[in-house]
Image 1: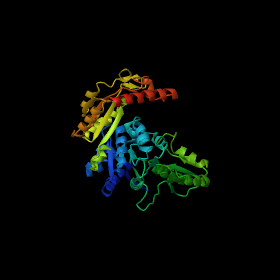
Image 2 (image 1 turned 120 degrees about the vertical axis):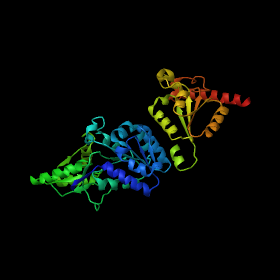
Image 3 (image 1 turned 90 degrees about the vertical axis):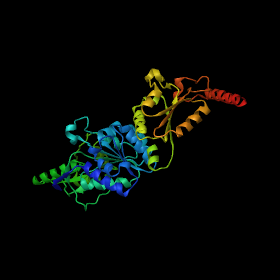
Image 4 (image 1 turned 180 degrees about the vertical axis):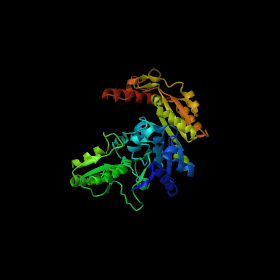
Length: 268
Length: 152
């Protein structure tokens, strides 16, 4: 992990989206007056005809994205997680997910790490909300390389995906050679004292904790859960058997956070 | 869909039918703003204006009026018709096709349950199915009425 270079996953998203726009003409992007913050502005500058600013109307943004998908477009709809999932839940559920339309909801500024924007903007329930919707896949990425991989990966999936992104800049965890697989967590280290499950911004924090704990003679393993749904049950069960103790680190409400995914997995 | 059709240069027209009660939803007006902002002249909205919703008369539950003025101020071409008159419907749809640079709304005045004496203008029939006897009576009235109209 490179602690020196930090980058927010929303920045990686914006850069990759603009790159994908060149390869795939069907990619269209929608935003709700936050393109500078969600970084869809990079795409907007390159492809103004395929970018739609919907103004501060997230409900209509989701319905418009659904309509575009019915014509074979691949819409990426972005806003802050609070407004995307909270304000437009009905449209996401009924207009996007139930008809299984090919819309990618890429929401930034999720979690408490939004910081000074305050409690109204700190979305702590989005993973639970999105995971509960049929057909919806849910991802939350931890660094630059993983986010860029995920953006390309979800553009190839035919169906709705929710990608949780963050405002807060975090260290680069992986180098370019790292391989990722949709639905499969990344195990970091072979520690046997406990497994710490983390996702998004909490992964680098868990790795820091792992390094500190090693000095005290405690060897934990960290699992980066970039795909929240479908959850990697196989890996959870393996870790439960090998380390006995499972811990989750959340930038989300504990109710409906990673802990719930782990319990579900370890029941089996 | 209307935006996608324009992006693809497909020339497809999109028709959307709305009830009047649902115009109380905020999203309708978000979509109305979008439709005129993106100059969606390939979009024709038809409002079934029977003035009834589940809890009663629209104007008593939560007034949406004046409706034509609202849509006009949102950048729509507004056409008001009798929603039971086929000639007026056809003329309005043809007129909408020739509107350029903005969406059209056809506000069709209708009577809920028209043609069935015990259903006409009764809000209670918004979302319930008739019983067997009611169904038979309704079908008799509708068949009889259609027959009479055909004789004329």
